[in-house]
Image (cartoon, rainbow, N blue to C red; front, side):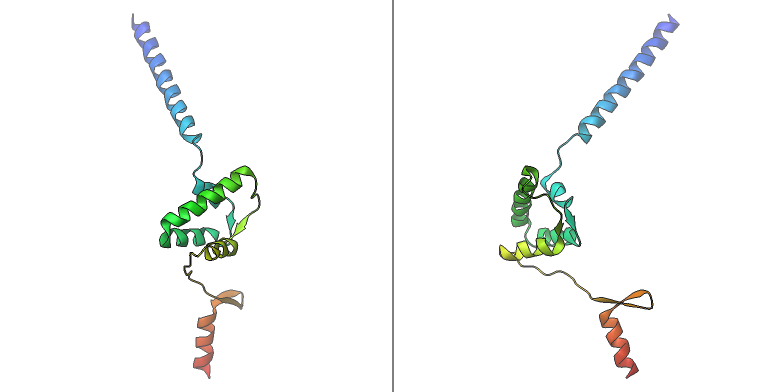
Length: 125
């Protein structure tokens, strides 16, 4: 009698573990969103450009991302997309927004902001 109860407890534990694993597997198999598909091909500030586009034009950017994802899924776009190319695309379709930019120069093995370097030079003079 006691063995039956223990056996049932073991079976219940195994069953609940299998159910948990099945739920995890189904969650992991969910299809990627259009944004995730596009972000996988972005490099060189591409994600920053996409985030800025969403911040300024959320509806329009969503449509652009959907179209890009469709092109990627169909194989018409297979290469990486740089931040500059993505920014150019948004500008060509009339979605203009600004990005924070800075110019850095290498000095004694360190990257120094150009504005800081110019400030130092003017103080020295």
